[in-house]
Image 1 (cartoon, rainbow, N blue to C red):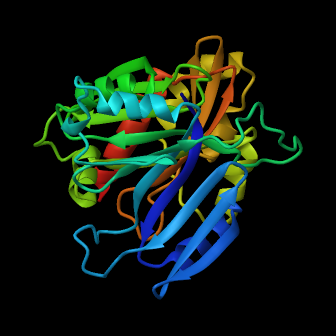
Image 2: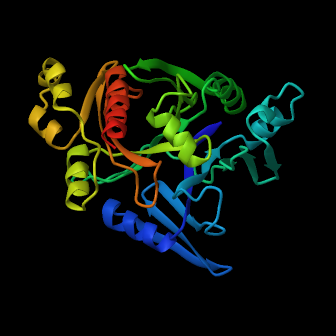
Length: 332
């Protein structure tokens, strides 16, 4: 079924400015630039991460709060299966998608607020990445986090799981003094490379980062994009040198996990200096750090993740990220 992420299409007021940011800050290369009806559409790439930057249709768009993810592309090995599921008399796709386009090459599903999911046949299914070992690289998209309105996470989980043959492999509720969220993870059954993190607020009334996202984005959407790297320390240092602002992690977090950090022979000071969070996951562990929203966006941010024998997520890290984002709102 789904084999890997194909691309992210980003709707932006200024494709050239956004392209310059990702070139300078993340080392992306421009692979294509075209002029279409006076608009400059740009394709950026870093290994298997592909961004298509397209211009807003006009400056008065109803989504003019900033740059936002317009479309997520997936490669699949059985496009016919998705078509069959959509056309099934028992299909529930219309509950979350109000525009469905099908042809022999592509299937596109679109939500009421114009977030699109597109599926095309994988031209070259991949095995392991052949990355240089002596430097960090952003190799591929590890996962996407999709922010949903309250009370919709179960419907989305059920429909995506049946439509795309995804399995639910993780679930967590986070509760703080002022807000909270439900979260779950869906991933591709065959190769487990595609992971979608679904999150929703526990209350529509709380002034939490998820409700703020939904308000600023005009509804549901991609809250953050996670880049996979083999060397998160070099990646974090590189981003710092490029002036990328990182989400600050409270120093207390590192004190509470000192024993686990020492067991894995990690340097607590380095983790703290670069705002890298640590958590155990099964037989291994994972390290993550998070940027503040990308320029010209009030909603979407980037995560950097490195996995060491880990393929899911740690409960402590999810709670820590949520609280860090909530603290950012409180300060603002």
